[in-house]
Length: 230
Image: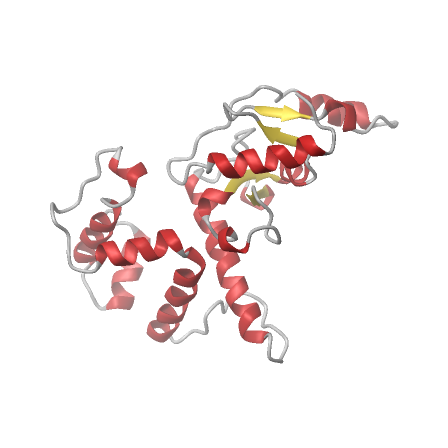
């Protein structure tokens, strides 16, 4: 959030403000984030009018705020919202698809940034191999589809194992696998051995948006319900 950060400089240019004033405003918002507050980021003692209302909107409805932010950015930059994404087909669902893409983009950016773009199981840091994995699936809980606390940064293989309920996390956020459900065919031994080498490893905690325990528990219960045991 320093005034020399390129993202801060670019945002300041869009807003017609100085990088220093934008950096100060970001720090004022940061004072409302418990995870940052614990790191000693305090901002101004009283902040400014409206900051708490905006923060609460972000916390309670991140998807709506992501869409609104994209629209405001579009007004300032002259580029369509989500212009980097494929254009949706014409029809009455086009707006809904555009909003969904914006929400998904926000979710991925927030989750990967929280984990410093490293897999929380292996530490792998190749961006093209990293996924913003939903703990509670997209179709299972619409209210938390874009909630960063419903996300984990996982490499593509562990993302698949997590999504298929072959992998889950225990109460201490340690990695667990369903050994009896792993493949046993020819050529599977090496892959299984690599996966299981992470059994019992502690999840690498994010610098913010710590996973919601209730979401991890819900995922674990789904895994256990189809016969996965510790």
